[in-house]
Image 1 (tube, rainbow, N blue to C red):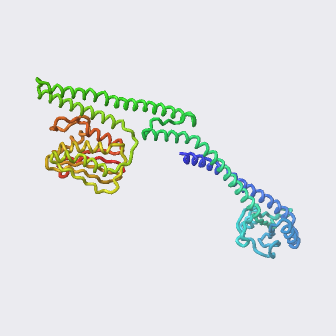
Image 2 (image 1 turned 120 degrees about the horizontal axis):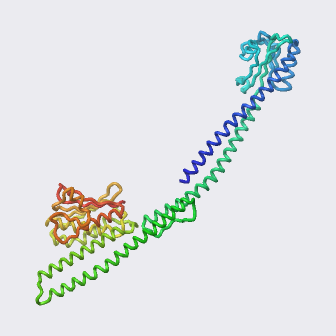
Image 3 (image 1 turned 180 degrees about the vertical axis):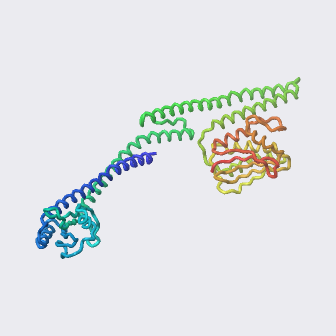
Length: 451
């Protein structure tokens, strides 16, 4: 932003300098040419009056004197355009074909202009005036050519002076513009850094409110108010989760212990107490699931580097005994190299626990549950594939909804496992999806973590 503001300042300044200095320099150049033209024309008219009716020798002498005193070349021609005096060459040359001489001899008007001399390799200014007798008869013409070297030098120095002034102005604008741009962008950058810290989970970050334009200060105050309110809400949620975890588990544990004690009474109905104990266990699982989901939704955005393959090895080893007890074989496929990814703390283990629990529930005996880790498109993909009954396309879309359970699923589940998986994947910067298994049999639960 600083560069863009500075570039805009310099662009406007450069445009103003060009608009002002180029016409000024051209006007100066034209004024110098006009002044020299007027001076040379005056000299030509004076010389024309002196050579009118003078013999060729006198005309030649006057031309030589002009050359010596002023430095310009003087040529005097007769009515036919033949030179009778020339300060730089012998007389008798035909000048009638020269445009300025032809114009004067034809119209009796003054002719002037500039041209480049290849012979002298310099620019020349010429002025031709008629030579007339006292009676007004056109006797010939006088042409004076004068080098514009001195004027060219002055004009060039003037251009260089304007260019130097432009450089100084642009340098000053650069310094002042950089200071002004930084005064505007510095509080914006501070606000951006504060927003980044909040996005990373540092809800105590605040933007400075004592620098920058009033609009930026007002925006910083609103941001700080929002951050404070967000910190308050998140803190309240975390406090609620911690308190609920304690307050809900304690009575459930006490109720389970009382049921177990009552079940041992002499007149106890074993079937009723067993059903009540199952419902208490299911309620405990439901509470645990809700608390885990609340923690996942309120998880800090700070992420850590985790080797997904290592985590998969650890969780498969933990679940292996249960799989063997159910007659299901756990297969681990982690041949990919460098499977490090960014995740929120504890996300991979919790994701694998939920996916393996679902897969073992769905997998028939003697089948395989495959845990695969691959890399693709900047992500590390974690797959848990079972060979169960599978889900329809609509069921796979709804599977991540809270409390949703597949038709025909065994009792005891809470319907929160996949919702927790999706929330942890999103908090880690990835996503979760259910895909058809190999050969449209079973389900492939895929979770992607950003590398």
